Amino acid sequence: MKREEIKVCVLRVGGTNCDAETRRSFEELGVQAEVLHVNKLVKRRSLMEYSALVFPGGFSYGDYVRAGAIWAKWILAKLGKRLKNFVEENRPILGICNGFQVLVEAGLLPGYEEISPYPEAALATNFPPGYNCRWVYIKHENKGKCVFTRTIPQEKVLRMPVAHSEGRFIFAKEKEKQFLERLYENDQLVFRYCDKDGEYAEGEFPKNPNDSFHDIVGICNPEGTIFGLMPHPERSFYWWQQPDWTGQEWMPQYGDGKLIFESLIEYLVKKF
Image 1 (cartoon, rainbow, N blue to C red):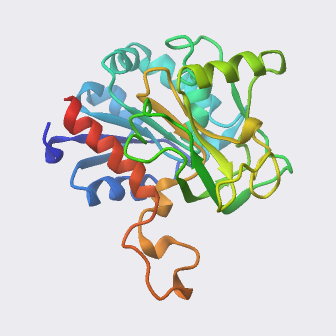
Image 2 (image 1 turned 90 degrees about the vertical axis):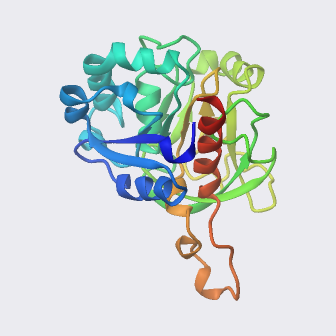
């Protein structure tokens, strides 16, 4: 598939945000991207028109019940069969912040079962509690399974912003050891919180801004085609989005967020 033939769908519902920034990031890299309300997708469009699917950040449906829970159940009820076919064809799905929460609530991540009827993990209330908006450092842990980070060297430290109230990744206490081992065995662990030198946060605030278990920032499914992360790559795409750009004599044209989008596009060019 040629780059200009790639078509990405960025979904939108009440409460989502950064959908326009996400679309612009893809378009900057020469692919087609469309922001589409899910109602239009259900009524007028085929999911298979798209090469990849993105659940953007925000606070879908006000984050009532739990963050991402309502949108996740809505998607499964309205698009369950089509979504299953999309996943079975190994078409990539990206969940950013609230989108990560949706993928977990929908049973698509960590994806130990194809689409689990019950969430196998959760993105719980931050500790310390409250909305946290800050730039963080994250360390790339994946060995090559995740299609969204294959072009990123293992152990490379990236910088991106987080903006959430419920980003604390957890497993059920009695399954923590078992499920963490599976993440490592399946090469599903993608990013962990760290400091600028790559030393793990070990739960220390604000390096780990939400007390996420094992400093987990992002994970993928066993096939590597579904990926969720709490930071916003679309908010760290250009040089002028960096928090310290005014104090620098020179900065590269793009920020670290570009690496996520570029890796996905390279996968699609080679795969389809």
